[in-house]
Length: 330
Ligand SMILES: CC(C)(COP(=O)(O)OP(=O)(O)OC[C@H]1O[C@@H](n2cnc3c(N)ncnc32)[C@H](O)[C@@H]1OP(=O)(O)O)[C@@H](O)C(=O)NCCC(=O)NCCS
Image 1 (tube, rainbow, N blue to C red):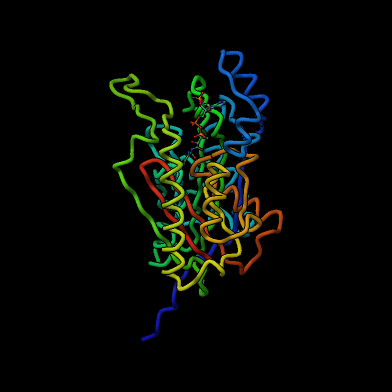
Image 2 (cartoon, helix red, strand yellow):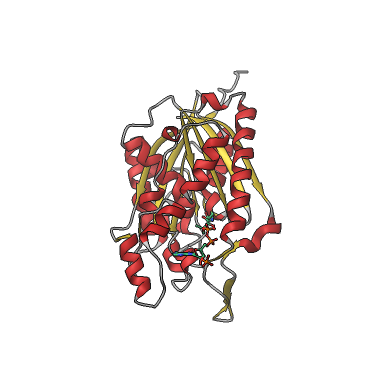
């Protein structure tokens, strides 16, 4: 009997996509002013670190951004749709109630051999959740090349009469191809949820009998989210490091969910990491929810800061409340 080759999963390519329409803080502030809502570039930059975000137009959906990001990740991995045997899309802003955005992506990519495709809903932790599921399936031998995508069109669920939330979010998508490997890529994963906090960040609406029931717009208690976020991000980072037998000193790059520069600075400080080791895109993208981590990862890879063999800590936190991290050798 032959011993089976130990299976690991490793990122073989990354990609991302942003809608062309970019709004600076000044653009958004002017749009809000037209509706009598007061805000300012200074306030947004000082409290959040955000300077600009991208919004889709009426013709674009999450799947369109996902497909663009996936195509770039496939190209980087030197693979085609024919090589993909699993598609997971993390999104809270799907194209439709059903089917999943992942099946829509599968169709748009022309992947016709029947591989499984499904969505993961863990809001801003969605990509970390999706990557964890894909890692488990690759290591179990259920898939050899998985497309793992975070794609969001949060501009569709923003309340532009609520200045405390509408300035924070943007649209975009990021993708990775996760491939079976003889050498370790993903070293440890750590996921959590606590439904007791679901009210502090939610879109409390749905469709019922052909009508919208509840409020289909984002609602958030910013300060409550802030307080919870910093604590759980530190804990999950340490949990992944401990599982892998590594320490903070081993982290080459921290790639946190891009919610707010102050949350990212707080987490880096607790992990004793200089800000130079944190990939920051929140200034240019805003908070793109499940897309933010793969967008930041792809930005760091494409500008050559992140190199093969380096150790990355990805971590996210979001509605639910959900949080988690993935430690990996790139
Ligand atoms: C939302 C957030 C930026 C607000 O910052 P804050 O320092 O807590 O600000 P506050 O909510 O206390 O508001 C302070 C003042 O700014 C005002 N304000 C809020 N939004 C504003 C805006 N866009 N422009 C100008 N003023 C604004 C408030 O009305 C308040 O005014 P008041 O003192 O006259 O009542 C901050 O709480 C935050 O980042 N939370 C985490 C959000 C997050 O990351 N969510 C996603 C997690 S996945």
